Image (tube, rainbow, N blue to C red; front, side):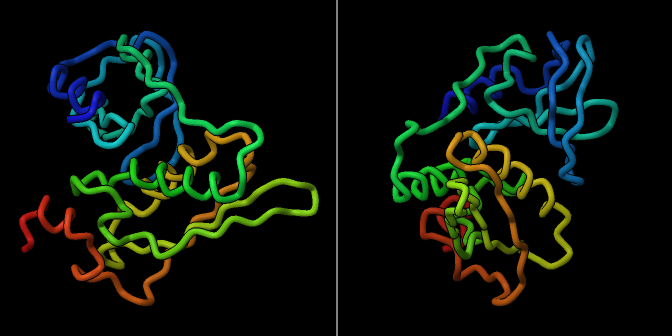
Length: 190
């Protein structure tokens, strides 16, 4: 069990007042909004490096770097050395994608087979742009915006990356065969 999952299991169902204003990602809309200091939220679950909380009948994701807003120890925001190579940056992107979860499924989006590809481009200005090609488990899945926003926020932790584009595609359509063996085991699909 990861540190963040331990935190959530200790506080699951607990109502905690926010210690400060905090930016969160709304579920299922994927929009960044601010919850105000002293708002009382309920801890729902934690996966990867985010905690899901309930507030006024809605769900939100709080990044691990913002756990101090819950009165908990914040997780350090992953980053890279300034002189990181393109290979190190691409590995960073994949590592961050492995901390992103569909809020309804306890398997990261890479092992779930939702990420079809990652492309890193360097502009003439020296800026780097990351493009993620991904899909959803079904065309009507309402979590696409949430997953994309979570991935974008985490990948932008590297100062070498100036923009992240997420492209949601449905060709080829997702199927169980795209899942890693670990994901199938976790979900009991063997």
